[in-house]
Image (cartoon, rainbow, N blue to C red):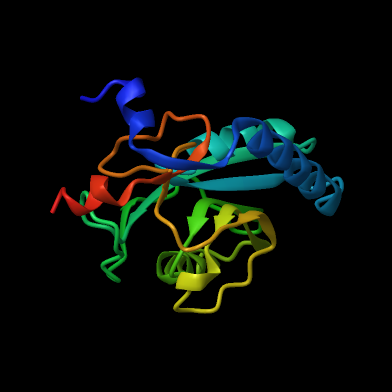
Amino acid sequence: MKAVSDLRADIGEILLTESQIQARVAELGAQVSIDYGGRSLTLVSVLKGSLPFMADLMRSIDRPLRIDLMEVSSYGGATTESSGLVRILKDLSSSIEGEDVLIVEDIIDTGLTLNYLVRYLRGKKPASLRICTLLDKPARRLVEIDVDYIGFTIPDQFVVGYGLDYGELYRNLRFVGVLRPEVYSSAG
């Protein structure tokens, strides 16, 4: 296992600093609080990458809320490309029927996984279903996705940190950085 100092050496540039992320997450939480008024809310985090974002976001929301976790996969191991095949590895623990639901995502790339997830969750009959993502990468979008809350729109670069990984590493970095291409191109 690499040390954190080794992980930082693999970063070509810091795209978003810890303070930029924290400031934007606070803004998103405040907006969600306003938009949902006095209603309670269920946050559905998509494991594993969105955990840091959801933890910070939920502390910024001034509404009664509960959380649930799902794990879906469209990537295979240490790859940088979506396979297009979406699998649910962990489903919701509780019913969301009649609930206001906010999907919390780390990054929207092609949109294939999220498109599948939205259709799947709509089938569970929530009162409302919205999407909040930390990062939006529209240059790679293959399907149209209506996103209600976007932290940052980013260029088409391979990013890690703040929950985002490559080969299950880099999630613990407090910033979002661009991974040096030689790190993932030599892993083949």
